Length: 172
Length: 100
Image (cartoon, rainbow over all chains, first blue to last red; front, side, top):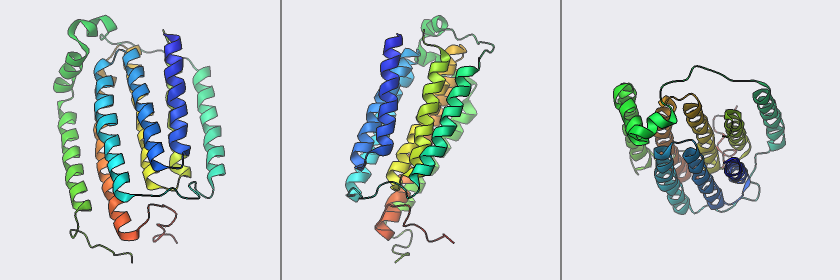
């Protein structure tokens, strides 16, 4: 179990670094794809089978395919200088902040009251059913708001990309 | 059993790698990918806490994060295409019209 976590966590961090550092945009997307699959593995380790399936279907299957489509559409070439001018300062500052956060997390301890959804209780009804029951009873209004967010995003994407709906070549 | 702190530290590392990506990269596409990294780090935290607090609310909230991520990708890529169509570039350093 620990070895499996070590493998998944290592691949996740390595792929995250590759996503940020690689030069070709297609390689960035593929590194992120590998990371998403390993995050799905972490979800399985945490008894969230349904979310693991959703992670693979929605993130790897829909969102990253959308990225790849746009990459093919734009036909971008790798730039000679792909990092921002002041990237060493950014890495330095954020690296020290990350070291502070990780140090604080290792030093601190954590405890809180636990709920009634133990692993066995969830297993009795099934992970998907347990999430569904919670989502459609306690979180019905946020669920509707989420659907509204998706609708607005859909209309926004159509309006932004359709030719002629906003004036083209304003900047030229 | 893997301790909760291992998941939190992993998620913090991935989150900061995402922040470094947003700050240091010049291509809008990679900046959007880095935002995806940060959202995934948050999701790992949610699921880990849901498991260790024996509450399923964290898993429900991953759904909402997923919705926001999907909306962000749709609008972000639409903006990217609109910018590319007008300016023929996806480099944030060249998009300095509002820079003083």
